[in-house]
Image (cartoon, rainbow, N blue to C red; front, top):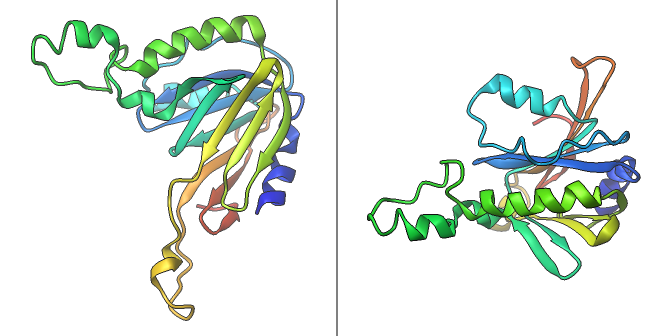
Length: 204
């Protein structure tokens, strides 16, 4: 699967990482061949389907993951999936003192929201471009960008086959992440590839 993933995502090389638009259920990484940088200012916890669709069609390439990931620059992790579930410093100062429960779905209450603001300021200046794609045989992915940025995806689901004999194994699989290519001339047409615990599939 490693070489297939690298071949599939090779089209990203030379494209600009323009935005990471996320909600509480996952994160979307958007890329465009022609830089049209908008920053991360539009990042929000999506509740409306039409707003989400506008996000999905904004980019030529899109990676959608509900798994574990992080964004690093040189030797520092700037943003990670676990930040969704860690209260912000402001929450600790105010809400915790009032004995209110932490709700990560409320915009601005988690570390994720605060650290995104920092990442926005970095990307506005750096505008990183994809330089190299690397992967592994388990569906892991690394996207190396200019200015020292790296986006890393970690598979965090084990294989169902571990608990079954060879003749009992099913065709069931779990999605790790998906890669979407939008046709800018015809938004009704997209190509979507699903990286799963049993390889790359075009249907999920």
